Length: 311
Image (cartoon, rainbow, N blue to C red):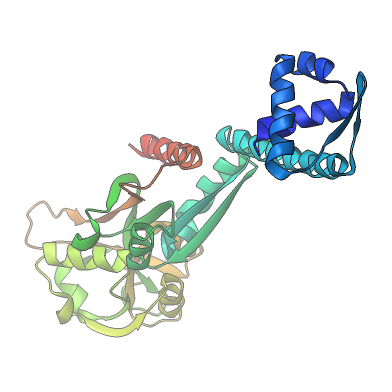
């Protein structure tokens, strides 16, 4: 049984005439007769009574008429859904984002996308950078958005491109001795307690890389707490415990309100007294071999537009 046979059958059942059905479908009358005969022979039933020069539908024909109409209606609905999906009128995008990127950088991009494509459902999950990288490699996410490095074992599976950047700020609370300072020397980083993210965090990776480039070892810092979200780190530092390296986008409001203060780091061994900065890239990840839908491509365009503005 084919969809074409069902269309022919329904035309005959509606008009109760082979020739008029053929004319309505723009096919020959023998083609109509052959389709009906094939259905009757294949299932061992009579769909129409041939009475002289006219036909009447049988009980089997009435049964098939109702079911065939349901089938073709469902096919039409499916075809329309596929066309709407292709035209970005509906569909789903699965995005994985590291915690800070997802909480502070991504919402504006999702809002821009939803204004353009309101029928697309965005399913966004947050985790640390390592979890998002692994999830994207496994196909859990169409796109991943993270800061920090990608494990060498995943680099063959994942394609990455920069879509933005953020700075890490060294911040302290009001009760900290650095609160009223505008800058500190690099060596002074060893003279305070530190509140850190866990090792899988992109921000933590960037901070550790920066320390290494400044010839400081993370193991030499006085780490008083390791926490698994930057929100927890921020809250603890605001309450007066130690210092932390947090993304600028995350602490902007607190710095404006004065509950946190950012200090610049200066290298005393450089004659220029150049201030040291920690700039972290925001990476868009996608699987190299998985199919890239039009929904993905449209969302990537939003992200790349932002990157062009930053550049």
